[in-house]
Length: 544
Image (cartoon, rainbow, N blue to C red):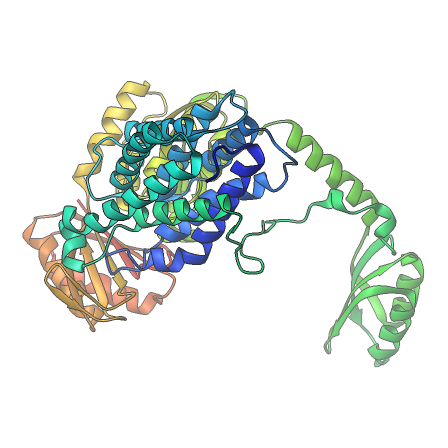
């Protein structure tokens, strides 16, 4: 039995857990009961813990405190979705207990697991049984009992896993939705996967993600990895020639090929367009003059660009991007789709965070958007229930005052923005924006990602699904049938203002048919049609 672990061991535990969640993320996603294509628990947990794994790989022989602190910091910023945030809180609590420690024995590990549970429960306003919280709480309690029996890390961790398995199996009985579907909680399963992978690492059987699965993928190149000496040709030369004769462009291509690299030459009856890297742009231009007159010419020194890029990246890394306040209040909003982004921008939102269902932005994404707003107080509109918790973590990471308005849908976010007063106090805006959320009904039409027997509906993969509020309203293979039913519901409820946002998979003509249907069925309502451009949801419909 392994009695204690140190910093290097802790790093291996987290990296192993990240690899296992990555391997099992699709299985975790598929445990999501609601049949709409939003099964992203596994994806969110994987992205959250892999943020820590990527940072830990960069540390050489870290102390226990340093490794655990790096884990807490990375998962806090990388947290995505409710499951990812709760996972980050579990790890943050563990880190807090390990602060100042050089090794961790069974007693300390049990206390750390409990600290993680306490941190997670504090962040959830209404903890529900049959979730990851339940699994983590019971596992930590069992670990504490085991530590009193034998103060060995491996023994205590084994006990925690054994109890987590029992607790996870029981989640199907604690949550009515899970019981009906006959599945266990996805987040709880994810925590068990992590604990089991940690035990494998303790025993020297570290879980390794498939090739590329556990490695950090750069979102952009790190130009400091390259030296200017690696640049063979200095000048990026681009030009367009207006063709004035019948000279063969292939001869120009041959000449430019001998002069440099990265050559692209395209031509038609009217122009020749050239891109080439060369040390002598003058020769390239002189040769090209034989073919006609220049329409445009651009020459850039790539060595100079490289140096400026590196300097800029180093400066950005050294200085946080926090805009100085120029006004009292500002707003950032989460949405997916150019049309929806334009709607929020026209309403006065300062920053748009791309994301939503199936692509929850991380706490770091929201933090960066908040920091760019030149205001003392920044209001955040998550517009998705699975983004609210990630947004709520931002306030502790920035000197700005961050206020999260708990909008769960885009229409709620729009309504909240309409009630925002740039000159109002924080108290006034919080009251007005929050109260407005219940004045709008949200309807959505999407598709079934899998077969399901849900809430009395026999659902088949590919069926259209209508959602009213947070409940499944209907299912059909005919989208018009669902639109008609929703319109009749809106008429019965006496709604006066209807806005239909059509998604990226709906063309304008079909969207107009939907709008005409609502106008016909709801003659006393004001119906507006806008291109939302949102993925996943064919229609988002707001009714007030």
